[in-house]
Amino acid sequence: MALTLNDIKPIGLCITTQELFDTKRFLYNYCDGLIIRGKDDQLVSELTVFKRDLNTFRTQLKFLNGYKAIITNNIDKILGIANSRYSKDEPRMVEQLVMNGKDIIKKTLRANSFEEILAMENEFKSKVTLPMYELFIKSLKKSNINVI
Image 1 (cartoon, rainbow, N blue to C red):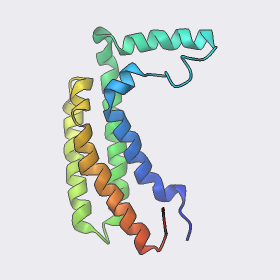
Image 2: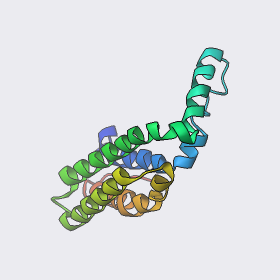
Image 3: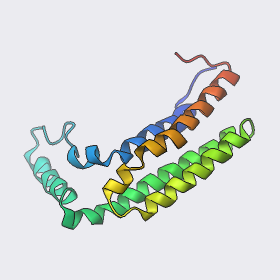
Image 4: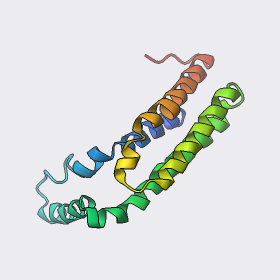
């Protein structure tokens, strides 16, 4: 049996969401991958203004609610996938994962700064990403899919 993109979706969501909890890297490295280093002066100019707003305390708060919305939506998707795929075989583990995920969603929604979100990075990793990875691996083993 082959491993599909749909199979690895929960792991991808966990990794992506975990990256979002690293708010320092997001704020300081926004679009530094290629765009700002590129030759498109108009795009670089627009993104530089956007990045400046993103890193200015006075305007930073307008971005925070959207950021929190993305994180909570991703966690909701992760919990939904875990519940639908793994609850039959690992009900206790999924129940704990869902409780932990809901707790992190509550904390995220109550966060008043990017720093408060950053403080939850390790908690997300230990209470959501790693258990989801464990559920994923157990599922692969049960399906006789070998992954290196």
